[in-house]
Length: 65
Image 1 (cartoon, rainbow, N blue to C red):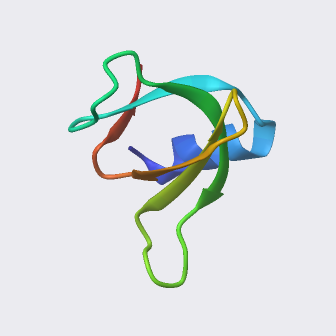
Image 2: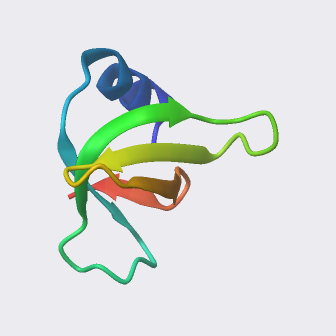
């Protein structure tokens, strides 16, 4: 997923549904982006789902549902 799209979602706080290509949840995860990248993993995307759980995604294999 493009970092510009993720940055836009992070800035606006938009709640949306994300899927990972190899994810186990067919319905995806509905939540908001809270972090893009980290010092040890530039591809990490953190999403807080609607129940408040923090989910990790690899931006290279994630997409909007």
